[in-house]
Length: 272
Image (cartoon, rainbow, N blue to C red; front, side, top):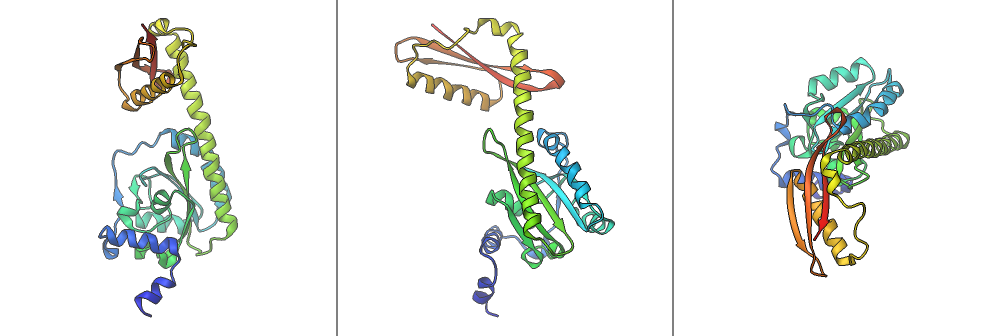
């Protein structure tokens, strides 16, 4: 079969991944999962996903399947396994929390490639560039932060059976959605706890009860942009800006520590 014919026989999403790997200079014969030693195994993503993983562990019990959770960089954070065959295969390859399954590390796979594609992604058998992974069929679905749209990680199911039907794909998409909803719940609780702590701090006493009603739309947008910028910096900072009516707005970002050592940034503004 010619190279052109071979490419025609490969699904376009897989071919796109292969081309990215080729452009990155990846050598299919030299793949090895990379271990990272700074993984946060108690992140908000892990806490959000744990109840869903617990349920899935019951669903796959006794089958040659496993469900894996990665963070937004492709590093595995959790896994639940069915029978001893999937455990042995996963352990042998380093499909273990702490190891990176980013496409840039091990080529086309249902974790790292789903991260790049930002959609549910299936990789079966020889579609994996790493020969050792070709015994698996896998589907990964990205977990998006409902507040920011940022890709927080991937929920992936992999099987030694080489069978991955529509029902399994639907299950993993539904599971990723449930993790997203748990993320939203936990994030809201976190922000509420931090806000309550801020309101009870001495700094909160200098904040006006409400935003001045006479601010024009341009000033409101400028203040919102400043607040987003200061929060993104993740540190204490002060910024001043001149408003349309000549007044000066002082925007201050302060670090706030809430219950269970939660930390965040509170932004306040006052006008002169």
